[in-house]
Length: 279
Image 1 (cartoon, rainbow, N blue to C red):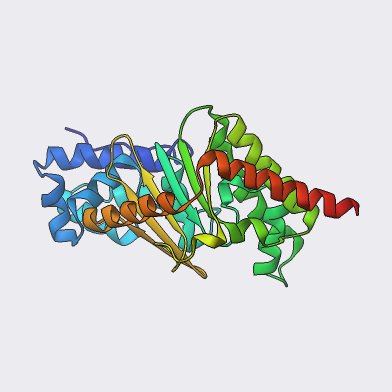
Image 2 (cartoon, one colour):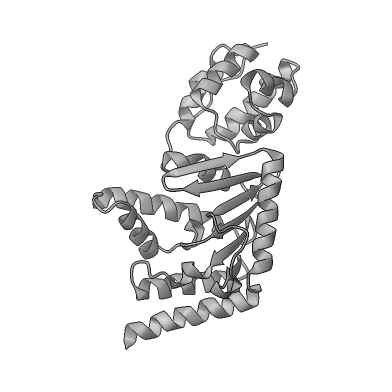
């Protein structure tokens, strides 16, 4: 029987590569756990590769070719996944985000990327890279706004964000930029496209004081947790670890204002910014 055919890298390469991995693994009569063992990864990780929610690295592709005897197929086609418009530490998470059925995100200091408007995103990237060229900033902003296109679907994915009040109060760009940004969030809430809750300052200590958290669940793959720091990111798939982060998120929603109270606060702060601009 002939081996898998090389595919067009322009047509969902990660999903196609995952589908071919599933075919090749089953042809070798291996379970996901059995293939993962010599690769020192979990069966869940193999499942995520097959579902297209995780990126296959060149080294992993080489080892898979050796184990499954696929004549360099995965090594050759893995090159289609090597380039990304996102920073290296975030690329895998951004690609998984685009396939998620539900996204739950906690943002302590900034409005989440999926909810950002252009002026806000530009101010954030300029603060991160004060000496970058305008072309470089334009590229980063374009990539960030492209991510938000997944909200064009009226129902999928579910996006549930918990924001610290600091994300509303920190002036990014200008007060006019903040007014625009918060009104945008309020519009998404009122159109029933997103769920947003705010943890007010008077809530005191809560379960995620140590940083942001993103949780992603999928139709045909195990959930993932993503933790981000300064120019670093960690995508986690260990079931016990991910479950612990889901508990953290549940605790955050318990500490937050209700969605209705949160909307009222967001709109009130937006009006304050808008009023200040005209004083």
